[in-house]
Structure formats: C-alpha cells, structure tokens
Image (cartoon, rainbow, N blue to C red; front, side, top):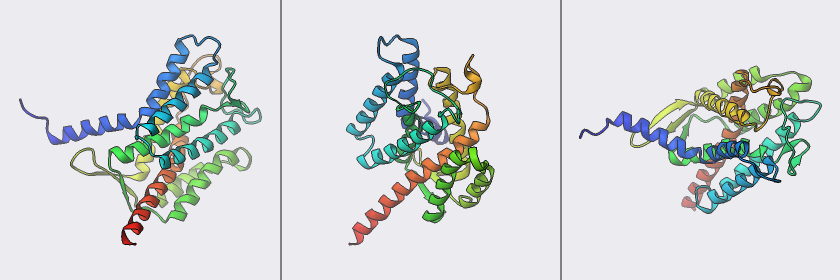
Length: 266
C-alpha cells in the first residue's frame, strides 16, 4: 500500500487541526440547531444556548484545551462583543435583533451573543496551539493596538459621524503589509500574508453567520418575514472584527513570549 504524498498529508493535517480549533464554534451551532428543532419546555431558547456555552467553556478550561490566561482573553472579547450587540440591537440603531424572549437579555441582547464573538477568539487561540503559529514582520505594538481600537470604535461611531471602514481597511493593509503568519500542519512550515488571512477568516465567519441566522440565532431586518442570505458586505465587516480579535490574541502570545524570555535571562 502506497502512503499518501507529504503535501496531501500536510493539507489533510491542516484541515483536521482547523476543525479541532473550531470546537467551541461547532458546539455553538449544534446547540442553535438543537434548540430550534427540539422543544425545551419552559426554558427560553436563548437561555439554553447560554447554559451550553458556559458549560463548554468550563470544560475547555478544565480539560486544559484553554488556559486561565486564554480564558481572560476570551472573556474580554465576550464583553467587547456584548457591548457591540447591545448597541447594534438598540431601538435607535436596529442593525439586527433577537426577537425571542429570554431571562438573560440585557437591553435587548441575550448574554449568549457575546459568545459568538468569543468563539472567534477561541478559534484563534486553538489554531495558535495546533498549528504552531508564529508571526514575522509584526508592526509596533502601539500601532497595532491603536488600529484595532479605531476599527472597534468605527462600528459605533459610523452611525453618527460617517463610516470610515474603507480608510481603516487601507490602513490595515499598510500596517500589516509585511506581516506573515507562519503555520506548521505537520513537518513543513507554510506562511500567508496576514491581511489575506483576515479576509479568509472573515469569509468563513460570514458563512457561519448565514448558518446561525438560518437557525434563528438572530435576524437582520431583511430576514424578518423569511430567511435570506446575509449581505456580502458583512464579509468585510467580519474581516475587520477579526483584526480586533487577532490583535488581542497576538498581543497575549507575544507578551507571554517576552515574559518567558525575560525569566530565562534572569
């Protein structure tokens, strides 16, 4: 029996490790589908999804798939995502909505909604571990943090002072033009320009968003009467949100690396 050629094995390993990195996100979608198809009695659906999300998060930390420090990063992004959800679902903005009742709603947004954003952070943390990610050509830390902050603020301010996402996208390409993300599925190390990685992840998150809205996780105004595809422009929006997540995760990893080096030299 002939063994598979190394390039095919590398590709297969990459797919498996990326799938393993999606444990939290996949569990989330399965929960949405289950809660849509199976009666839950008196338990509101959004509350059920929150309970499962908390249980999965606990199990990931308990099993060692995520460290307590990584949990802090995920929790931070959960709070950032929840703040964005509360703002976007407010009556004055109405970008999307969560029409079902829940005890755990905060100003119109269920608490589980923050986990949808945290799932992206979990995916990145898991990918960093499974694929031995490393960065070259990373910009100065302050520049990366300021750009990520400006992108996050634009999601709020564009309703009042204009949308600058295209300028921010150009700034993103300039800032990360020389940045490469290196990954190792098995033996060989590959690399990809970081802006291209943002685009790819944004595209797959857009696909996931279509699945989530199909299962009634939330709905856009054009989905009130019947389900419809999420507009393609959301790929760009998710790509920008991915930048925020990536910078937070990268800063954690780079900080940990610097800390380990300083301890070795002490």
